[in-house]
Length: 284
Image 1 (cartoon, rainbow, N blue to C red):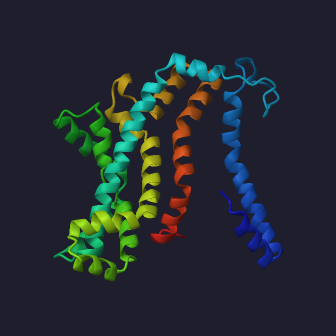
Image 2 (tube, rainbow, N blue to C red):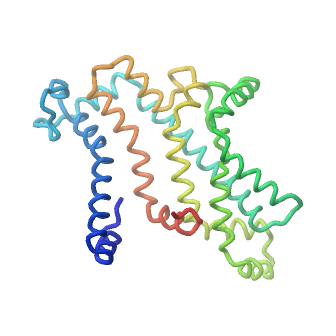
Image 3 (cartoon, rainbow, N blue to C red):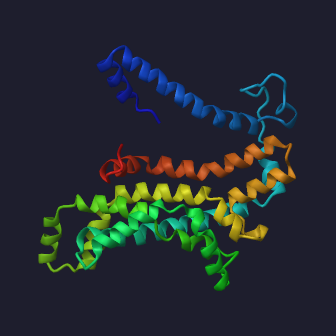
């Protein structure tokens, strides 16, 4: 996570202050990674070695028994499938809806566009908990509770995504669109063939943000999904705490399985993610 070249340049330019800054960053990274390392270590220990008076970071005996028991005692693969469908569909919807909205705010002038964009940004200040009851009553009226739709549809758009993509689209030269338009390309053609391919880094960054948020979302699926067969992975893993409260090895194995997809997504798209952050106005 820490850019070594950046740290070395900082230490070289600022002397002892740079070294203190470097030490602080490494300490922060170590504090962040310790719980993850302990979770991995616990998941690989035999059940008799999980709780010992002297903690052992490196287990003397490595076993996958906890992973096997987690897969046998709970429908983790079914919960994995449910989470995958909801997170992927929700992410694709956000990318499509936010891209169209952001392009409209960036390029199309219509009456009230500025006011509408300000209202869109203001929705970011409304806590998501405020909308829980109205959304629940709405989906209950349409008999969509305990379905994939009740989790996917509320994620169909995100104001932060509209803002992020609009900032990127504003950086695309208008002359490029004018040149394509002279060649006979329509507005829709410019959006699909020119703008979206250019916005791939910003879309990748927004996609990772949305996927991770959707994958880890707990409160809304907990309220709206009532059957065990429809649970997402975070809810399913949480129910295991009640049934197997003292089986820490199995619980840690389940947590590791739940965190693998988000790690894979980030590793695959980390270059586009960093490029998208730096080109869409979200850099610090």
